Image (tube, rainbow, N blue to C red; front, side):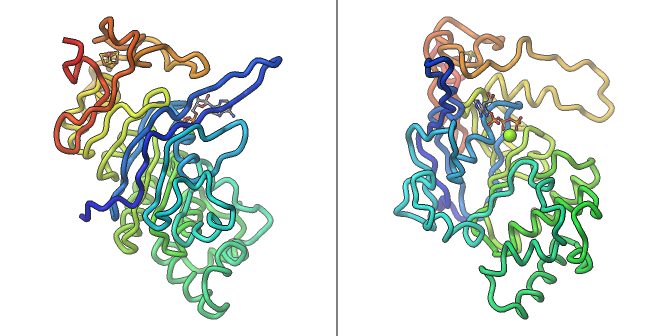
Length: 330
Ligand SMILES: Nc1ncnc2c1ncn2[C@@H]1O[C@H](COP(=O)(O)OP(=O)(O)OP(=O)(O)O)[C@@H](O)[C@H]1O
Ligand code: SF4
Ligand SMILES: [Mg+2]
């Protein structure tokens, strides 16, 4: 695997800026996040609901609309080296790379296929302008559908005639038909049952292998990350708290929150009760000071309540943000 990053995220910050009766309120949903995605890898982003996963990838993909605002930092793609972030790029620059270099499969996208358009027409609307003549186009679409294990007859169907698994394959086929270098996929398998989910994941791996793309794969489901991703970043309340190769996270997570996520995974044959964390993730409009995990953390000490821990590299490719784990609290 090449070590060259195709995406470099540095100190990225974004917030939902709202006004209530003239008082400005910031929800810091992406707070000082830095990580790289390398060429040809599948990088996973995990974390509970509302931890900021979707907001982070929207910021990276430049899909920023009020009340969301970019606050600072950069998210630079290797195919657009002069552009600090797509959020600041011109609409023409973004249009030039969207789908041909960067594909974004949004959360819930399989439900937004145009209900009154046959799938074949949607492919034309979407990709004809990127891909040669109409003759080549038909051939290329059919070959690509085969890659995602769909029959060409699907092109004559309306979305409601397809199962959830087939619709998700269609959205993945749409996103990948132009062979992008980088694919962002937000919870693409969450609405599918387990068997179909496994199938779609295997298909994404195949497609990534065949096209040599990198994938930034977002899901709260740690089982999916175990099956698919090469490296994993764990988010909590808008911050990245741990990052390591996926097998390292599953064998030896260091952050108390990651350890909880892994300990709460069901295991075949093990009927013992899973220990749950007390409390709920914070409301980001009123996030706790210091380490945002401190109100729920079994290891919390005084410094945790006042100072945010920095991401620190404790071993090769293993970063963690925790005062106790890094020894700063000693
Ligand atoms: N339009 C909005 N205005 C204000 N706050 C928002 C808005 N949309 C999202 N948020 C807040 O931003 C935070 C991050 O939400 P986000 O959707 O990015 O989380 P997520 O990790 O993708 O969750 P899920 O797993 O449920 O998809 C949450 O606290 C959410 O309440
Ligand atoms: S910094 Fe403190 S509160 Fe945060 S995870 Fe580490 S021990 Fe827990
Ligand atoms: Mg989300």
